[in-house]
Length: 184
Image (cartoon, rainbow, N blue to C red; front, top):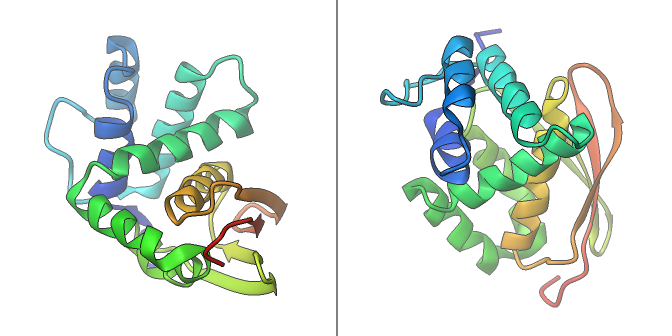
């Protein structure tokens, strides 16, 4: 398998836009030491391991009193808030509200591919407003993506969306997603 890479839109969504004013000089220095220099233009891609280290450092720095899973989830939600301010994010999230939760889930493969070169998505319908979503997401990134999916559910018109980590191993995760909305 080719090296797993994370692309600039997700890095920009979290670190440049989503965390505006929240990255202290100390955190900025730590990120630089992990391979992300926020004082320079973003690279065309970052190794997945660099991304994981940077999210870990940031989760611990910004949410020191939260359990690790919660800190990572909060950053995932924040990334979508920031991603909304990127050109690609504006386009994608603008369409999501029109699509509704089901079609948003079915478009997830493409959406995740704008952020990296490795994500695979498998969706299983479990009811009218319930789905099981499997991702090949390693380690604690499962909680980051949990936050991403929560924020995406809200963006797709499902404010009462829940995303639970139902099972996982070191290289993949399965979520149970349930929502209550008027769109269906």
